[in-house]
Image (cartoon, rainbow, N blue to C red):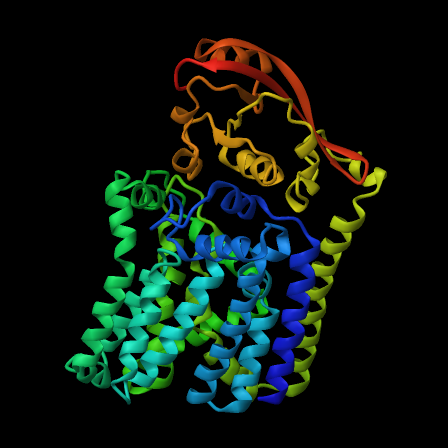
Length: 479
């Protein structure tokens, strides 16, 4: 345990440096900028990740990157500990050490879920907690109450938790100990607890025309046949996990499923993993929506104990070399991003990008906008939710509302609805598209619409983006 402890300490230290020295990404900025209150749920995801960053802001009195990211870094340490507990129970301490190492060097888990303001960190911790408690529950029934608590928290974190929980339940139905557990009242008490905890999601959706369910479910709709897409998705997932971790993970998953319930150590974890790993790739066959590679991450998460056991038995020289190279690559990438954010890009590199296409636009906060909002403006409206997120986070200390005038406002349509701005003065960010067309589109919505000042996103003296604007006075109808 001592060696694994120091692996976790070093990984958390790297995450803290990364969290404090880099700007919020697009999704992070959107989450922080669009949520203003502790609601029962939100447009994109359930409540846990939103509440964590809102709570951090309330306690710290600010929303600096390290503040809003700190709860997610803490949860990454919790997840590491749960990986240890699950693996040491099934395969022993040596396997548990390598499971923790693998978790700590996998980019999607160690940096993305382990640092960023996203629902992935909370759902990972809750699912690992569920897996540990459920495995204990197969032997000691009182653990099913704790498993139900963790399952409810997982459902309150991200919708794809339902896939892992469903797979685990199917594995129980197919195993003798699992079917025996289904006769225990403690298990059904845990199920009732999970359902009760998840009920705010349903209540919120019912009050908001099932907006979140429709949005997330709509990602599987469409008919755009792409036979090679599952392999593209698996390839992307491999890059996110690390290809030399992903390949043995998939092999171990198939082996555990092939052995079936007669090998219970890997059976339940494999059953929990298989639906996310397979389903998102299959949906990619026809879905007109882009399948994001991290959606399947909760499935791979449950395979770390199997991977740790496999790694503990492989050739030590190769294993240690792969581990050292992987850790060096991850740490180098993180520190490179820190250096870029803190020092900026050189003029020679910046000039290689067309205006508005610099990668720094995603890596840094647009804080230079805070001093550029003209007086008398009640709100700023972007045309896209992700632009509104970056702008809203930059204006977090400026007393103006930020909303979206467009077909996909996401949470901004609920937290800052355009209908609340009737009679107000709005600064409209006229991008993307033709400035002339944007002006003609919104002119009928205001008593007057005149060109406003160009907003400039700056970083280390370099101009990254110039955004034309219009000032609309006395909004007379909702755009």
